[in-house]
Image (tube, rainbow, N blue to C red; front, top):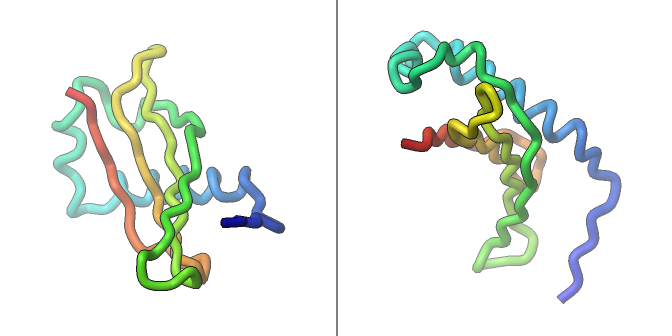
Length: 100
């Protein structure tokens, strides 16, 4: 198998993930997120973590990119935010995970 990645601006993908996180925490229906952490969620630092390629089992033309950032407060990892793009570069989902 050979996977080629051409023309992907990794820094832009992480910028989009950070913007997705801000959008997520600012949605009124996600107001409960403030209660999920012991620190104000707006004080959390985002650090670029990884980008994963998820291939479809049905066809090689379908895939997703999962762009992950770590949630950090005072050098402690609090969780992860994962921003998901499809093969057409469209945001299709996101995940917000808090560590216990």
